[in-house]
Image 1 (tube, rainbow, N blue to C red):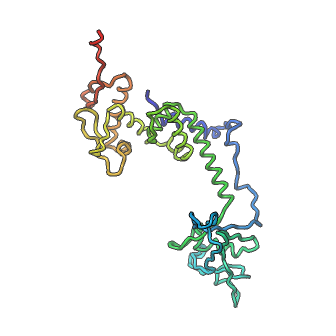
Image 2: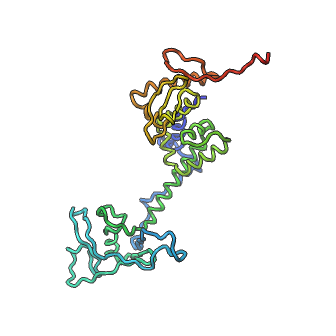
Image 3: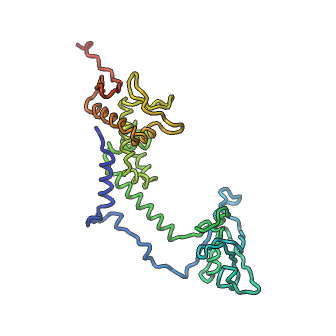
Length: 330
């Protein structure tokens, strides 16, 4: 039975994710009612800023000691200043109101120490100059203006950003699983074939691996529902199973089925044959190939056995399934 994969799944996705756009509302227990607006969260300006060393010792000599007890970074650096469009020298000087050397007023500047203890440097809100120096430094891997080639030593720990990112990931995971759970067994098998999941097993085993993929790759799964290549590859897989096309891995060719099947296309080295054929059918030369595949597939789905011959205008030979012998039973 033919499965109109993309159409059906896109309707599921639209029903579950976008039904609010036309004045509707999600179900009372829907996770989408739990909408955190991070832009309206109260920000504590008196909160400390935390920086962490990026390099971690995965196999420490002492259990739990993943960072050195003490680690010092330079208190002077030359950075790119996006505001002025120039390279400027910065330094952490005790008592100064700015980190830029050309703006500092001390005749005898006292350079402050920048030391990480057990991998962390907690900067209290009373030390804004130290915080600004760390954020502007080339050693900060989160600095968008970091000079290429500079050694990234630390990063800023942003708990609010991490929480927002985690919630967004949970929302995507829930949305993907919600769509997946409403799919029919035929749809699950069709998508599983495209994903390379073994479908020659019980439905419970197939669904288990399918849901594991959806859970681990929710965004990829949701995006695939709008991708026409998913539906097209499913049809191509069905055509291979029906013997309409043959993926000749030894010759690296995709051939028409039959005794004297002609080659359709040559598969590039390192590329999956069916993936290559899927992309090929979107080209002008491959459009007619895909049309023939669909016509032959429609014929094979209407009868139990594959047809013994194909119309001359198709110019394709299709392998036939052996008929059951009935003469011996009579």
